[in-house]
View 1 (cartoon, rainbow, N blue to C red):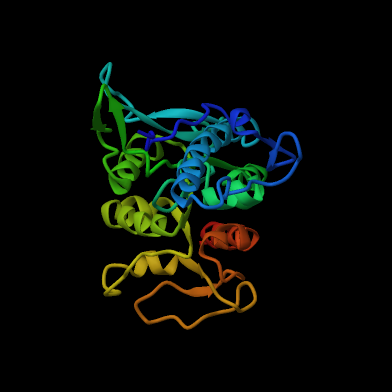
View 2: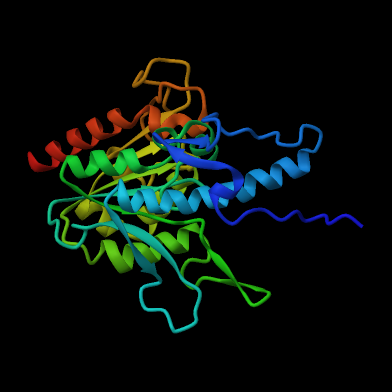
Length: 298
């Protein structure tokens, strides 16, 4: 009887791929990734892609450390020996920068810390799919950086799935990170980027830590966010410091129709959900600079 669960290599080279010049390429031919390794077997192709994607994530972690200048910090902070644990990425100056910190929150799904989109990383490369360009520009502009890991919520221990305490879901993770790291940082000004469900996570942080937001958060940039604000009451402080770059066929930063109870909407300059963060990156940093200057000017 055929094995319904195929086995795959435990490293990218075993799949025949490597990251070269910022793109995933076939080691022998230099060609980009090919999804349909078995043209008539969609199930196998999907499992092959998912297995490769897990290894791509491991390589992205290494690139975040090397190219992004980041290091890992545990979540939760004080785990008991043997307890499952995840991590976030911090820049080297996270605990010493007393001016600005940038917080990156990706959307839901398979992506982990360091990626906006696995699909774009695999098919188009590091610049398109990862958060590394944000880290590099942020550090150039004087920000410390914290990269959340909201989708890493469990581990297999023995044969059983165990949830990671205080990281059972995206909001629990973000809350733990806020209390363990952001509250302990010296930075007077916090800027947040939330992509897709990361926007809802940012809204939940505002709900939970309103005083912290009012005191320290200078700007929230949302990219194709899935957050919902049913009633403006209680959210004025968030709305006033936020901007939402949405999928649109209009040029980048074109103002879009915005309901009275919503965050200002502008075009991300792309019709593709997963491309929004990269497409509007320069505009996001310009927005943060505007907000930073406004706060300094009182």
